[in-house]
Length: 552
Image (tube, rainbow, N blue to C red; front, side, top):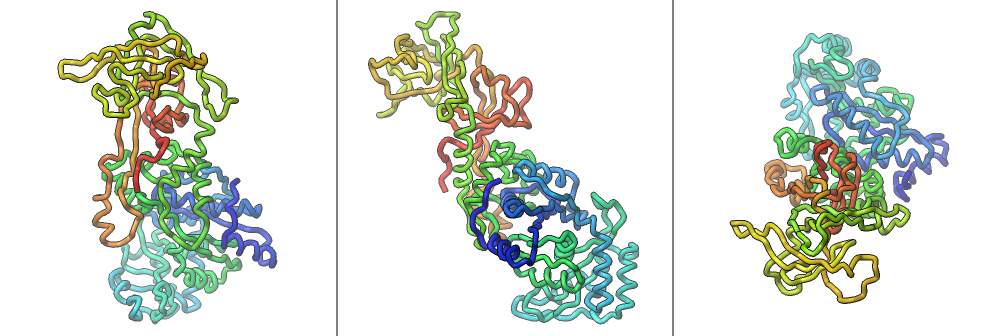
């Protein structure tokens, strides 16, 4: 697996191993199963699994399933698939819900130590009592309940005697702490909801900030790697581990999250795009989800190379989306077979080519990888070219096809436009051309030169195909999380993010399978869409153009 290079987290691990603090590195990837993973999660996956792999350590895949209202088995399965597709295997598969009984016992321990209490304040009141960054919080009137009363109320919470929101369990720390996270945070809430893993066994659920450090400690995680927004929660993380008397003491380390231009990284916003029909699902190729990128045609190698290049640091600056596209091109140029596809067809009849004759031309499957061999391309009297490769009244320095001009057909012959056929509306529907049989590619013809080379597909044996061309779904957004962004988020949806065209591909493409990838001459790299391709119709998603078509 790819090496992540030098970084500050690796330095900590090296030091801990050398000092004898740990004899084995154990990390974890702990997603909440409340949505599909996106490119930001890919960075966390690659860092956690990659660093453990470098030290011959272990990585657990753990689902932080502490909120039954938002979680679903669908998301669990998609996350497993994404991790495997990226090239990683977890050593153990865990769920936070596996530890609910142990977490409950640790909460009881805190109550017995006088470090937790049941509070009757509403969520709004708790928020008001918490104070602000510049003013201290105010103690709840229920803060000094006796240990006996708290134990009784917490048991009754578990028994289901109270309604949602009627009571919570809070840690008793310091309402005047400059760190708001330590101002008596809620660690258990009531939720009468069926859990995807435990059914109706529980009606109280631990909060993430309480559950997460316990999970890490139970699993003997050595380095709990997370993004920088959790940095101010590190004191609470350490408090929970210490006061709950956990034998293992994990170390939380934060790195800068991955932000990509023109990309939304909020699962809540991505869900909104799905729910409101802006996309056709979590795996829509315009989505920054791993499943969407897989369906579009990105390769796991390109994503790993991209993450490795962005590095591991504390900073969270936005990375240009074209950088990711660069790594896709670099990976595919040595893997993808070359072929020709006509996305917007115009028929050409070569009037002096023998009727009924089919000629098989030779072309390299990938000129950069000669060992991939050759392919056969049929050629006949009737072909399709791109409409954009013909102009009846061209501007200066237009070198493609126009009346009286001669161009080379890729892998074939020179043709010259002799006649233009139009329909009753004046639209060009067919070209009549002649060809020069002496100009066949590969024969060493050294006569006259032409300045234009265009691609084509033989008309009678070609395969009908649909082509889906994508541009960024969100324009000019690097995911600023503030009130203004909330108001303008949907306003930034690009109405031209998807263009669908109907055309043709070479007949040897007929047997293409979902996720097969090709480079179409002049058009870019394409992936056979696994969702819409059928035995009767090929659908191609453009992965990236040969050069970026989007200007930042």
